[in-house]
Image 1 (tube, protein in one colour):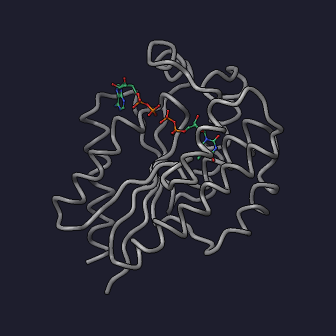
Image 2 (image 1 turned 120 degrees about the horizontal axis):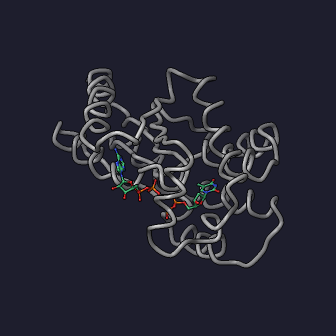
Length: 208
Ligand SMILES: Nc1ncnc2c1ncn2[C@@H]1O[C@H](COP(=O)(O)OP(=O)(O)O)[C@@H](O)[C@H]1O
Ligand SMILES: Cc1cn([C@H]2C[C@H](O)[C@@H](COP(=O)(O)OP(=O)(O)O)O2)c(=O)[nH]c1=O
């Protein structure tokens, strides 16, 4: 059986990830593939408890935050991502390791090297086949956030924090252009979807 394709979606809060993730799933499904969406932090019973801690606790050491995100991810990998990929199912991860590099490595200024050391502990050491990085000018993302729902602990961070997160994402996309595809969302939704469709067609072709 052919292994499933592993996709992740990333971006600063307000960049448009939630607007497109179900579109991506439906497009893949229409092309005859079984597909699931996972979310991080969370996606398993233990992971959802960790999510609650991460998004609602008042304060924690940056290392604690980093390790909790990875603890949730390890459970998700072993319980959900790997068994599905092995069974030929496509997996769309609503955030994966790149989020830790951008938010904890960049946003919290822990540095990429430290995140990579923790990443090395994951079993197995998975990498995505393709990552969509949703991106908008920071002002627009912050404006979207301020108009939206109630904000969680991370979304309440400063503008400087999100600047560092975004610039880490840009750095990653520059280092790995084959894997990470930047998709601008300051254009109409249809424009974004047309671009996504091109990348998805390419992935579908590769897997056939
Ligand atoms: N091209 C686009 N792609 C995605 N979102 C867009 C686009 N144009 C406008 N928007 C709006 O921006 C907001 C993005 O919010 P959301 O998808 O919840 O972001 P995230 O999940 O990344 O925090 C939505 O209100 C959406 O309607
Ligand atoms: C996966 C991950 C998420 N995060 C942050 C980004 C988000 O602000 C928050 C929750 O992610 P997410 O569920 O994507 O946010 P939303 O509820 O807006 O869809 O966790 C990290 O800081 N590090 C990580 O490794």
